[in-house]
Image (cartoon, rainbow, N blue to C red; front, side, top):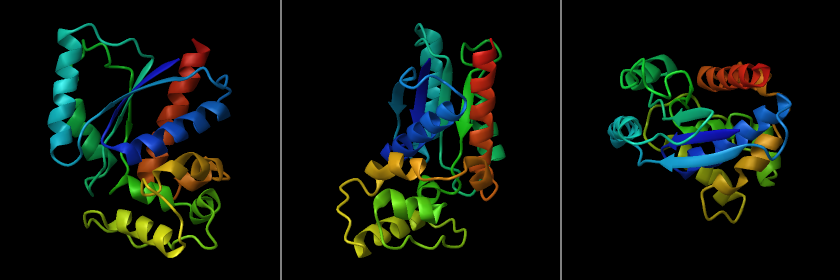
Amino acid sequence: MVILYFLEDRAQEGFIKALVERVAKEEAIVPGTLIHQVRSARGGYRVIAAFRKFIKDTIKRQPPEADFLIVAIDGNCKGHKERVKELERFIKPTHPFKNKIIYAVPDPHIERWYIIDQRAFKDGVGLNKGPDLPPYKCKKEHYKQVLNRALRESKVNSLLGGVEYAEKIIDNIENLDLLAKQNAGFQNFVEDLRSAFRKKVKN
């Protein structure tokens, strides 16, 4: 099964790919059968323009073979519904990816998803104590600073700001669906991903 990704940065790549593998395992997808193909773009306001170009390019050229296209973009306090609407306007009914897109909208930023389960973060990284989940804030890089501070204070050697621990963090989440109830964007992505896998296996 080939999964194509359009992502903002390495933080998204690390966490979302690991989450896809976890959901696939829970949906009885044979381990090792997922092929991940990543396309990335710089974050911020440029990502919308980059996504539009990516969609146009797949019309001009033969689109890559893929069972699903996972598009991830930070919500930046706009939320899942508004972000998806913003991106969907570029997808015409005849586009080859029209019914294959699964949206991941970490709101406000992907780093919040890294620490949303404090126990999983603590055990995955190997800390004595995980960071408390701070109140919801739209301030740019707020959650990245929380993440980096937790690593620094625990003297964890991380060259990628915690990205290298994404898989272990995901592995230490006890119940994805229960955790999803704490975050609407996380819940939307997990549920949409489960649904897509189930339809694919059924067909």
